[in-house]
Image (cartoon, rainbow, N blue to C red; front, side):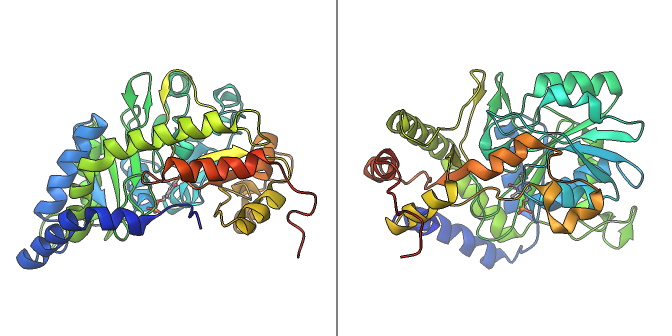
Length: 372
Ligand SMILES: *Cc1c(COP(=O)(O)O)cnc(C)c1O
């Protein structure tokens, strides 16, 4: 079986570093925030090329406090994309604001800046591009439109640790960048985790208050806030894993290049990357006609795949109240029908890539995907 990802293999290789780091937290009993989290925050801020990182308990929490710190609230509209994980728009609603969608670009699955200005209204306060699958959104035109309309930009970089656009790191190209350390992300905790990064000392200060009950001193609450603190154990694990993030990212890029080469001329179209970006391939997502039949066929051959995402957010039952319908975002809808994430993780071997590519190159057998 070739899994979609292999976190067990990753742990096996890291065990000798991870176990003592966890034990140290248990010994000093700094279970919430504390020195391991502070150490990780320093490492991660430096990695992103920013001055401040605020460790929190999920990427969703990072998005929520970023919006609040930027002053987004009830009556405000935040423009984002319908082709993303649900947390992007859930966080906008947690802040009391309304998500407004613009369609994505066909090639990169990220916000289409040419459609952005049409979506701006007098209530628009912020833009939230998503660096989906680890490919940065086209940030220069997005920033230019934001400047012209005095809008805040917050990056959803939850899938884009270490990605770059014109030499700038994901998370550093806007007022605030938000990351997730959910176990399956390119940098993953052994539980939930997230961080917001910024160069703005004021935003950093507000986000530190928002993650921990608005306390500067214990039991003095300067603002209404949340319990969004990062665990000490997760900080220690992430601190260890930081050392491996660049080698893992380079391994992902090398595997993607191998897949690209082997899939040329096959029914699967490899993901496209802009020339001026460093794509970090959180997912290696191809396009395939008859995607669901392919998925069943690959499963028959012991190859695990996933669909990120089968239903764009504007067509999700939970968000019917936003008032969108079929046909509103045709690119997102067509990508959702054809996208397929192939097995992809830094420890994956070339023979495994060859096996997956071999099945795809052989074409879809006539009876594939039908119930046996
Ligand atoms: C994972 C993810 C989130 C949410 O992160 P959690 O840590 O799971 O809360 C938000 N946006 C995107 C694009 C994600 O992939």
